[in-house]
Image 1 (cartoon, helix red, strand yellow):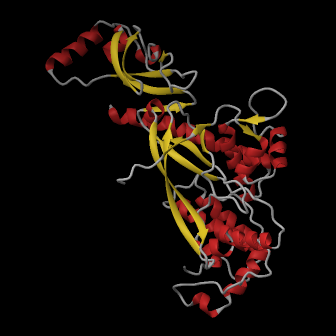
Image 2 (cartoon, rainbow over the protein chains, first blue to last red):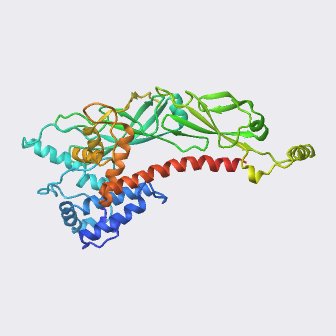
Image 3 (tube, rainbow over the protein chains, first blue to last red):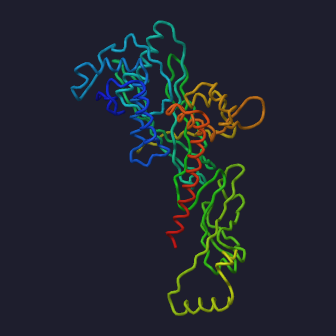
Length: 320
Length: 106
């Protein structure tokens, strides 16, 4: 594994004060915050920045890290291994949410691996009881159609395990998960016991999957309700009548009321997400005016104009 | 994959599925943090009855608020304001995506 230069990640000098580190971290957090950042690779960059901050903002971890960094082999490039028992005498508390993708370097020094060692050592001294494993938290991205039909997804999970020599072994597990139909955005699916293993005989943690829908220009969900655009030809909007429309719930025939203007919504009760109770489907009507191409079409538009003498469109608004 | 793996059936967390301890554990915060944020009107409780329960959407929000507070040492109300704006932007983006598609289709 490579030695990580956390000072470089945050862009601060090795003698930076706590305040410098805090300022640098916040600036980077604002830049790469996954909810707002438009930078490519923001999530990966944010994980790096978080890792560097986790170590450098904690005086104990920073002191231990500085001690390691001062050893010549830290900068020799290539395979860095911390000296055996390098952390003897340091007491790192394992805090924070563990879904961050920490590097092997961090895991080996301060992460779960280190906690396993510490837990093992404390257990050997008879001081630690059973500890519940940490929960895993992941997002699963679905299409809205998956919520209508149910789906299967393969979730990749990273976990670390220590081998007999105390080296960290990264393991990637793949879990096949059945997504039941009727799930909504922001809901969670819990898989009991699929988180990290417990310590000293404690129970394993859970895996929680947060459901998010992939953005789709055809439709959007708001809670249980689904909204979809329904284009109407100008004459359909004016005259009304039956019209077929493909919806996530299948193709349905709807009665378009006469004099339907753009912006009007048709509600199809119970055709939203099939949860219990099911949501509704709203068709948001919009009017399409096709361009006249043939002489007949041009004549038809002219006849339409002539049959509305005195109609002032700027004053009448949309006429809805 | 040639081997047919076990398919795990997940349990969908219903309304009011989470306790205060669950929310605290999944956000990496103390129970007192959750309690304070309910009293401050930042987090909504779900359901009736004596014990506070929380639904899934509140967990997503709580994680976001906890994150903002710790990243920026933000006041809870300021973190809540940022979370409100992020939720609103996400909603507007979804609507905009459909509108822009409509424009392109004409």
